[in-house]
Image 1 (cartoon, rainbow, N blue to C red):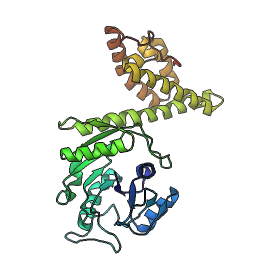
Image 2: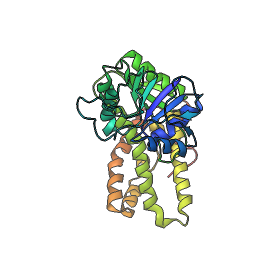
Image 3: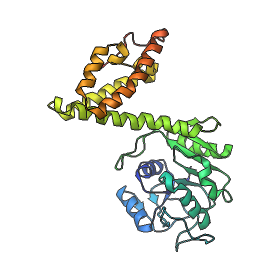
Image 4: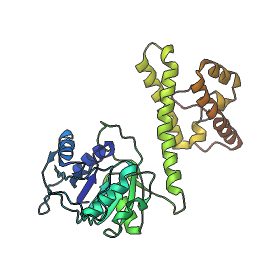
Length: 318
């Protein structure tokens, strides 16, 4: 993968661009202005040129910022909006790393600019390739590549080993998404072609990532006054999460389920509820039904070979 134009300078772009550069990819960055793109490059410790160099390769070491209209607004209808010095993309991959709400307007801006990339992908977990429809007349390969990872605002470069949800309007588009995933050391995951598949996939990812973070936050607040060292509490809770996830990865969530609800210890459950504030208790109560259903399902089947004999994670238990 030789050339990629990344549209956006947010958290995902901040993780993605250094990873691409480290793999020898020539990267150009678009943002709301050339100044913002240049500042983004400098913040990452990468040299930025003022204009794209199509004659020679930068060997993956230079970022080439372009200017772009405000991503929140569309260019005037029927206007060929091409800012001074902003050359259209005529080869390689055009990659939209912008919030979901502005993907369509960013794609429209690219189309009006005259971009004709070999492939255009967005990184949204929710939208399918249809959100890139403004580029359909100039690019036959429109798709998506969504990395299943957590990207804090000032996080490190994207790590290899992530699963990427890949797909597109054609086999070629899906192949381009899979190629990006593999280029960055990831594992492509193909969706089934059924209505609502992308929404269900993204809801599942959001439930796990956002849900787990929300539960950790609630747990820390609940126990904050009960411990001497909040940092030690966080370490213990995240170790517990890691232990559960280790068992879940190896044996599935039924085997990893733990706690008094899984053991049928209703007296302890009631004690927990009595110690909670109403908002946290409401979340706890909402989780009791699926936890008890999981425990019943586990009891109805023989544990898989090699699964832990007890219901608790090996290294920690609540």
